[in-house]
Image (cartoon, rainbow, N blue to C red):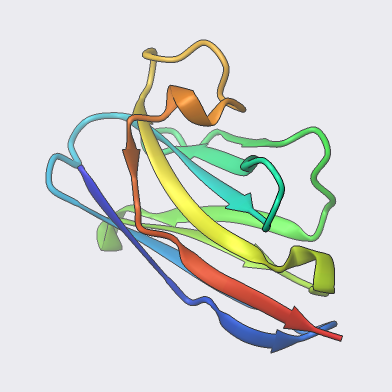
Length: 125
């Protein structure tokens, strides 16, 4: 499976943003699609993930309620909505896929086998 992110850019603090992750290739497999972010000098962290089959969602334990993940199977897309953006949200946001059942820790980036190229989000104050 291949993943391509879009929707990043420069936004003002307080604004909302929706990132898209479009899947192609072998999309008939049941995947867990995760949204990660990595700020300069920090480790990559899971924001949220979603099961492409049943839509079960999971949010990282330290993630606030400002993030919402969703999917549109017809468009082969997974979205990440971020509201009330803050300067500390500045990071590279990436989506990643792992076959359901092929992981032990959905928070761990190393568990995901397929990655997009990432999209940069910069939040100005």
